Length: 207
Image 1: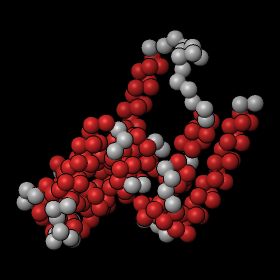
Image 2 (image 1 turned 135 degrees about the horizontal axis):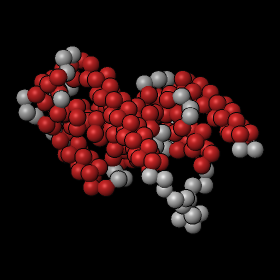
Image 3 (image 1 turned 30 degrees about the vertical axis):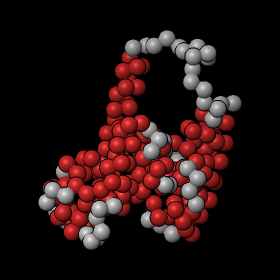
Image 4 (image 1 turned 135 degrees about the vertical axis):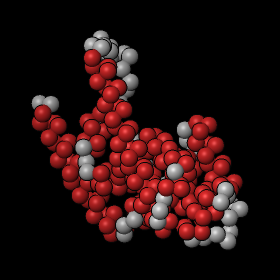
């Protein structure tokens, strides 16, 4: 996924973050290692954090996409993860583990996201809302496919969405998920097989 694809499609907030990353990242040329970048961040150099954000943007996005299955939600949560990471940077003890640390923050935010969604669903159910007429329902041409994809294991779902829906090639998907292109092909094959099984099961249940 390109940087513009990840951060340039959903309003002023994403545009502002993209501008901040691009503007500051160009200034940092000598600082390379994570240890030095984090030391620079803690010393008040925000441009160093922009480099860290750019370095791990795809990996964090892939984690979020694997959890949510939705590009829009994944983009928003990925941004929140980097903001939270910046605020809590002094809590990171092992500076060489920034990647794992920021991904853990992203995973926790995804879990919080699901919890909030459940609360909203429960609230709507308790209010006993009237059925929505067919004319006012949002159109979804592939509801069964979306439902089946959401039931795939996280690692299969992420690879499937990034390859087929986001238009990335196997090498790009592999870089985002930190696996080889061959492993991507294997995951896609297994994801397609499992997706067919899920769709067949749904068809049987629906009669």
